[in-house]
Length: 457
Image 1 (cartoon, rainbow, N blue to C red):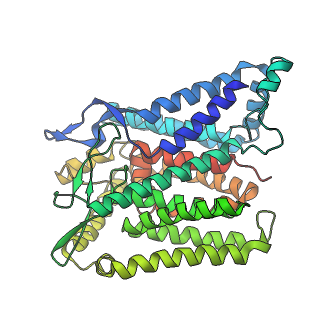
Image 2 (spheres, helix red, strand yellow):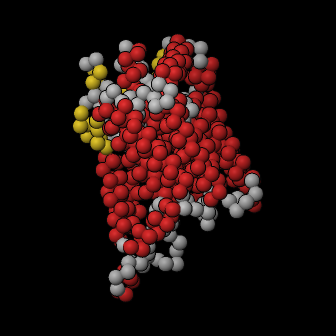
Image 3 (tube, helix red, strand yellow):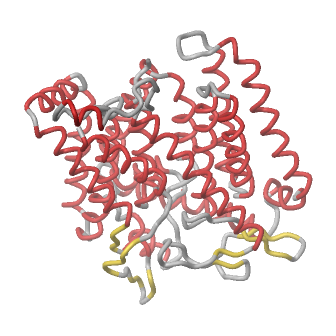
């Protein structure tokens, strides 16, 4: 159907544009008379694109009786996962009803449901768009696109688009690092930053302040986490490429991504990428249909050699900066670690006070601001602890069961993408934006949908 092909290209566009935060601010959030991000109501450009994709998905799945039967048959085979999902939605609903600010909680849950719906749409996407439009013999010929060539699957193309979007972010981050500034653009959804700004993401050493790149993700740590996942995804995709010319282009793109990841100076992103690489090696060496064992030594040698060369080059050139970041004994580094410790103290205090149902979905920043009397206090930099604090014990258990089920499905059907999930899960230990902000939510559930939806061929 033509609808499938339209949705195919829109999905590619969505995953390429995913990190860009162009938006229309419907209502400015205020706290103590100042702008407050967590209370701001916005409509993102990618959100509009997603709703078009969702409508096309619903039209395709429920237009014909056969499509409806196929959809419900596939859903029926995932009864336990659907049960967990229903319970999770019920807990979110209870959380909104119990929240002290139902407006903020409802807005947060609405964004979260959009992200989860994206995961479902991608996971239930068929393996490839139809090449022939079933209308007439003449139209069949018009829509027959080079049948002798293999057409990439929708999810395979979306993975490539996601990776390509990461390359673009890496190039933007490298530019920001070189010019030591982040230009402001309302059309691109980028706020301006400079090394001399109070609260900017900088590294202080030898009396100087070095601005860390932001990309378009609003902070150096989200930028680094995003590139960590993209880098490991690139390793997986590289191992599936057959043609030498494409491998060269892919290696160039990976060099940009790794460079951006290194210059993010995000320790959590570095650790997450290292975890992903370990799992990548384990999957490559593990016997099974996923491996291409004859090419394993060459793959490992090339990728590790390229990666080490890039890492050594930056470490040699910027050793004082790396030493400052690793030793963490300067004023700003010590302050950063102290703030992280305080974040955990407040989070565990909220968990102790609201153990069963939490403070309410999306309500944690308000509780934190009231407790600290500060507009600039950030949620705890740990997605799992933040989920526990907002949803309570019951919500956290269901959140865990959903993702355990998804991991089991990926392990059984396509082990090659386990490194990507390992990177994402490890990254969640060091960041909150994967749960607290729209871009992080769609990135989290979008990656899960892409990986879960792919079947072993």
